[in-house]
Image 1 (cartoon, rainbow, N blue to C red):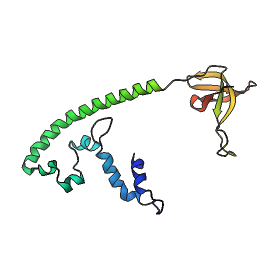
Image 2 (cartoon, rainbow, N blue to C red):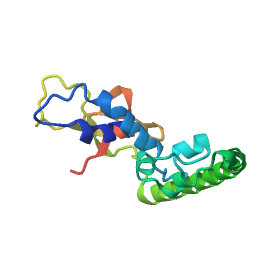
Image 3 (cartoon, helix red, strand yellow):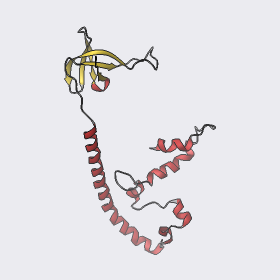
Image 4 (cartoon, one colour):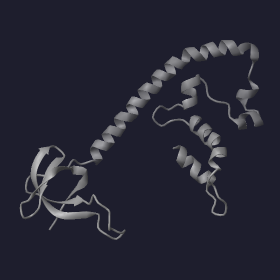
Length: 178
């Protein structure tokens, strides 16, 4: 997230921007700390300090919060805010759990499991990139699934029956359609 915030601030085609990130980092961090999180519903600043940060524009233009500040009543309102902080953190915890459940539900609906059976034809991701260029296909094969070691781990064989000694993860295999 920090890099996503820095890139548009420092990129300039006409000037070198190698050292400009140092000057922009505090502004990016401030924006991340004062932006409400989708998972908790609160800003990270609030979760740590128990009150929302006063933005520079609030100070400059005299927001109602700044104008209503009273030094004498500050201690009492600080104690009230600390009492309410535990409740807000509990609410954030519940909101976060609900958010994670929704993510899990969405993921379960969209992701389909896949598995191979003995005898299936697959392509294997090329491991050695020496002598290859950008137009070389990233897959080689076809190979035959010779053995299922456990879910997601397979031993491969060449079409003529020679079995490889090492095992392959399902992430490095794709189904081959002849």
